[in-house]
View 1 (spheres, rainbow, N blue to C red):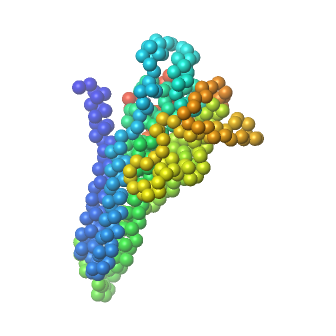
View 2 (view 1 turned 90 degrees about the vertical axis):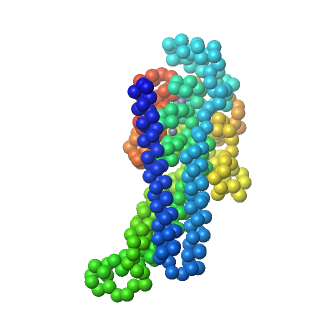
View 3 (view 1 turned 120 degrees about the vertical axis):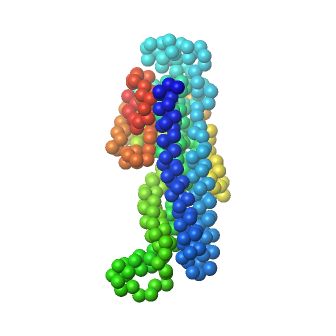
Length: 377
Ligand SMILES: [Zn+2]
Ligand SMILES: [Zn+2]
């Protein structure tokens, strides 16, 4: 077996560690809440029933959406975005990037493409050998092009993109609900155990209605862990709600998509309610269920093209599915994204290896999975 293949297998195995960690924490929280708190600690039957009912509803929704986020395969570009055989051979033989672009432009005339690289070129993935549809990026961790890629999340060991973005938002929502409910319902028992503990240490312990037991350890930790997760999820949750309202992916939030008139961070925004419907669908009854209801096919998106004059912006709605083909007008450069700009990348995100997107820049291919973001210049 080749060493690179072994390395790849090891990386794939290690990538499951964060998911296993979360699964173990969730299993322990279930045991601690149901057995140690509800069965052993809470004296009132009515309280037990209410807590167990609400707990199980939030637990099921949380596990369901987490499962769907992990195991929904990222959507990839269809065959239409591959070069036909003759063009592909021509492209591979060709040494000059300009001529390669001519080949790509010819093929792209029949495709619904609005976005380009910063230099105005057709976005092409050398690794997957496909023309990238709008909002599609190559993920170095998954080693594939992912439609409407948002980010690669190690906590779900999957790419978050067109096929599972709704599930990811619901996963954040229900994990927040789950942690908030645990923290709120455990609080009074946490205080009781905590004060019991402190009084004992002062050797002045009056009779407390909670017995000193091993449940104390679980209840105290349950509150700490739930509160800690609440705080960390809350910022991510509000950030993604803001992104949904603006119809931007995480990548687009840090590097505006480039249209024929230049970069436009609001290029895909259709207004608040339509932006919500793009991810959650038209029917509100399905919004809170982790079933796929996102609009579109993931290949083309309704866009809002803005004219280049910043003094008098004239906006028009451009229906999806029409190709304008012109790329020469784009002379503006996108702002390069550095890792330090993205506070989220530090611990929870891999972003795509996008350097192969540019026809002019030909960087060395690296097999290593790294956080690598470069400007499309
Ligand atoms: Zn690719
Ligand atoms: Zn990925």
